[in-house]
Structure formats: structure tokens, C-alpha cells
Image (tube, rainbow, N blue to C red; front, side):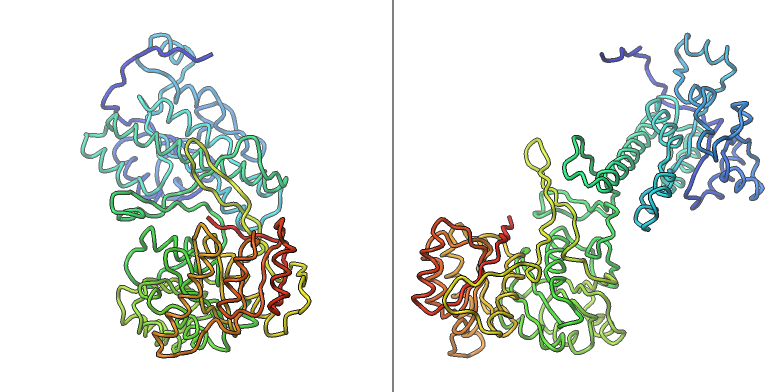
Length: 538
């Protein structure tokens, strides 16, 4: 049953006379607290915060003086007391509330400054279970929520970035804060506690390996607001979840313009793809446009890999994203900057490479200090009308699959290497996906078609276009291998690959007509491998 409202109008201006400060992150605390103190605000604090303020010469009263009760249980219980929460929750224009506060000696608190135990940071650090649990804040969120609920009379600060704005507002309003300002602070406070609880509930779900808990919360912290989203009429912002997976969200941007919504989406796709290739075994480069690969290649050096990747579709690569699985070196940088490129993302870069890229001021260079693990578990989230669609990350890696040769002819060693390469790439191409590969490089990519046959034909045509652009009469798909992200429902999809000159095929298998497709492959001397794994991507 809902609680009835007393419908007492909130005052616009609330003078700030008493403040309660209890923070884990002490960034900017000293000058902020000094400004309050010199403005005549009575300061009340807890534990380490009180000690820090006293050490800075700021007059402060310990919360135990307010409650008449000491901190106990290693500080687990210190502000969970009626003298604190009554001071935060009392409706000051309500006679009953005012009488109760006076009877119990509760003086109102006008400003609360709280940031929470660093649960997210401790979790990311890999701390043991007990340490993570100990960093679940209880008293802090209780004070934040109480203050935010009673924003009609109390201002709540949960972010050190708001200290300056609060001091400016106090100066502007002769020591008071307006209702609208308090309301905005309250909204931010509830967002903070929601994200905090989301992190905790998510950690418990992960720890207990609960894939689909009854209640699932997702939280994040606003990192940046972009000029617009996919299109100029759409707004967009980037929220950090705290996941430590190396990538565009955690990368350091060394130069270039602000990343756009499309830049971030494409760069994430590019870096996730290139991470499929172990840098200890080979250099790898992926060029991405609209979240689909224009070209992917491996080589002894990044330069070799880049040149092979670019050759796949040099027209589409214009204005694309380049992702590398190794440190960007000068030779690769020289080649990349010759083509208009939006973003380069790499684990690291040499000083020489950075200097070369610096000549292109608008080119964004992102350094990640590592590669994401393609095998690691995780989740992807997509919004649909009225719901969130949640699934596990596609962390199936072809090297871990039990590949089954289903045709009379088995792939050669070279074909098998290219087949695995092609299936790695197909995993990152929008369905229906067909990928032609030859000698460790894509030669044709067909993406996002409703018909698998059309994807195959488009990939072959793109390969022919690339050959013509290079002034070659070669049929690049001749002698290539082909990967399909899902099974061929009919033999016609396979026949399109045969017509293009492919000699080997890798696909999940599992069609009702697998026998028909296998027979067609045998009839044309095609080697075919089943993976048992599908890689739909939408």
C-alpha cells in the first residue's frame, strides 16, 4: 500500500547552517570544507573524514557527539541512528515532525556530503570475497537516500565534482540553496545509489554464476556527452560500467577530436575482432566501417598485415577504423596516415609512431594497454520496446572447437589455417555473413544480407572490385576459402562459393539439408569443415 503524502510545499531557499560530511574519496574535500566552515556552517563528520578535517585545522564535531553513541563494529555502525536520520528526514514545516525533533533533541541537518565505500574499485582489483563484502557501504547509501528523499529541506552531494557548483550557488543565494538545485542533486544521488547497488547485485550474480537473476540492474557513470548519436537528431552519451575489459571505453586517447557515437561503436567492433588473433603468433590488423570489416589480415609485421587488409576493400576503408593487435610502430603508422582514417586503436605505440600520427591532428589515437580476452565471459545488452535483451558474450573461439571434416577431401594445411582465420572474422560480421580468405587475408566480405546467397555473391563481387582497383585481372577468390556464420540451408549458398573459385568451406553445420550440401561439395572437390558453433551477429 502506498504511503500518503502530506502535500506540504517545499521552501525555495534553504539556508545551509549544519552539514554532515562522510566521504571515502577525499578529492577536493579540504578547500570545500574550509569554505563551508568560514561561512559559518557547523560541520559534523565521521571517522577518517573527521580526522582529516581536524588535521587540516577545520573545526569539526564527531558524529558520536550528535548520537551520544560511539562508532562500533569496526565502523560498521556509526550514522545508523535516529539523531542522524531524524535530522535528515524530518519535514520541517510539519508540526508533528517538528515536535518529535524538539522532544528528542534532534537538530536539522541542511547539507549532507557523502561518497560511498569504493566497492567498484575493490571489485575490479581482484580482492578476495571478504574484502569485497567489507566494502559494501550501508550507512552511506542510507544517508544519501534519506537526504535525497527529503530534498525539500536537505541538499545532498555525492560527487566531488559538484563542490564548486555548490559553493557558487551558496554565494549567489547568500548562504542558501534553491529547491531546483537541491532537486538536481537529489536526482544525481539516487542515480549514484542505483548504480552502486547494481554493481553489488551484479557482483553477487557473477560470484554465484547466476546467468539470469530475477532482478537485474545495470549501472554506469557518465563519461562523456557526444555531439549527437548515430544521426544528428539523436542525443548520445557514454556511460562507463566499471568493466576492466581493455577497449575503447577504457582506452587513453592521445590525440584527435572527441570520439563520436559511431566512432565508439565501430572502434569497439574493430578491437574485439583483432583481439581474436594472438599477438605472440602473428601481427593482425582489422579495418572497420559501420561495424563491419572492410579488410582483416595477418602478417609478419603490422605493415604487411595493414597492406593486405587495405587491399581487400580500399574504397570502403576510406574514413574507417584501424585496429591493431600489437604496438603501433613507425612503419605501420606511415602507411595508415596515407589513407583518411578516423581512429587508430592499439595496445601501445612507439614514440616514433605517435610523432607520425601527430601530423594528422584530427586522427584519433587510442591506447588500451592490453587486448580483451575473446574467451572471457560477459554480457551484451540491447534495448527493445519495454525491455532489455540480455545475453552472454559470444566467446566461442575457433581454436577451441572440435572441427569435423565432412567431405571426402580434407583441407590442406594452408586451407585449414585460412578456414580458421575466416571463421574468426565471420564471427564479427553482421549476419548473414560470408567471408572469403586467402593467405591470411580477407579478399571479400559479404555482410548483412537477408539471403546467404546474396552475401556470397556480394563478397565475390567486392573481391573483383578490389582486383580491378589494383589494376589486376586476377580473380582474388580463386583458390580462396570461405566461412559462413551459419549453416547453408540449401546447396545454392555453397554453389555461389564454388562459382567464385573457393576450394574449402567452414560453417557450423546443422541444416536439415546438410547431406545435400555435403554432396554438392564432394561433387566439386570442395573440402568442408563443420564447427558446431553458429556466429549470428545482429
